Length: 345
Image 1 (cartoon, rainbow, N blue to C red):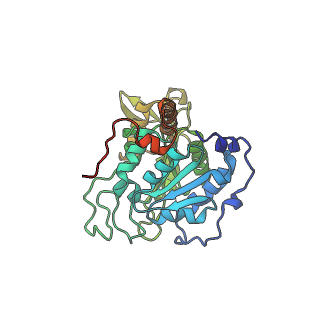
Image 2 (cartoon, rainbow, N blue to C red):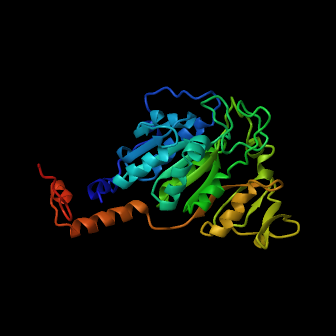
Image 3 (cartoon, helix red, strand yellow):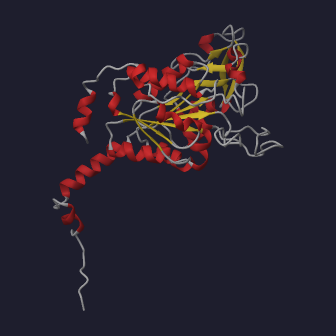
C-alpha cells in the first residue's frame, strides 16, 4: 500500500468549496439539476477530511460527464460507459485517493452497465454519483434505461415499450454495500448523502433524480414540488419509524413482505416499520416502492453494510506474492519458472 500518500491524509490541509471551483465556465442549460450536484459536492468534500490533491473525478460521456472540468481537482473525461472501469483501475492502483464518478442513467446503465455491476460486486472503494433524468440529454432526448414505459421521446414518438431499470434495485442485486437516493431539489439532503458516501468503505452508489429542463422537464415533479413532495416521499433515517405526509399522518407497516401505507390515526409511530440501513431484505422492499403506484418513493440511505474492500485485498496479494518471489527485477520475474529459448538454426 502507498503508505506515504495515506500519511498525507492524516495531516489534512484545510480548503473550502470555493477552492474546488475551476476556471472553466459551467456549460449546462440554465435550470439543469446538474448545477445542484456540482455545488453540493464542492460543499461536501471540504468536510470529509481528505486533501484536495487526493481527489479525482472520473466521467464518461453525457451532460453529467462535464463534471471534471468544473472541479479544481484531478480528473479525467473518458469515453462512453467506461467511467466506472477507469475509476476502478485508478482506485486499485492508488488506494489512497478519493475517487468520484459522475455518470448519467444512460452512460452508467446502458453501455456502462457491465462495469457498474462488477464494481459493486467487487466492492471497490469508489463513489458513483448517477444523475438520473430518465433520458439521454446530451444527444438530444432519446429514451434511456430509466425512461418510463410509455414515455414519448425523440426516439420513441409512440412511447417507450422497454421496461425501465430501477437503479437502486439493480445496485442491491449486484451486491452493492452502500445504496442511496437523493434529488437535485433538496441540496441539504444531497450534501448529507455525499458525505455518507465518502464515509463508507466500499462501492458507494447514489441515484440522484435530476431534472432535465429541456428534454424531460418535470419528470420528478411529484417528488420535488412543494405541494406534492411530502405525501409522495419518505426520507429514511436509520433506527427511526418510517412516517411521512405533510402532517406526519402516514406510515409504513409490513404485511409479511408487503409494505402497507397506514394512517397514524390507526397506528402509533412506535407501531410503524423502523428503518434499518444494515438490513438487505428491507432495502429491497423499500427500493421496490418507488416503482409501485400508490406508494411514496424512498430517499436516503437504503443500505450501508461492511464487506471486504477489493483494492486492499489486491494490495495484500501483491505483498504476499512479492515476499514469495525470488525475483528482484522485472527481467528476473519474466525468466522465472518454465521458459524456453528459440535457437538459431
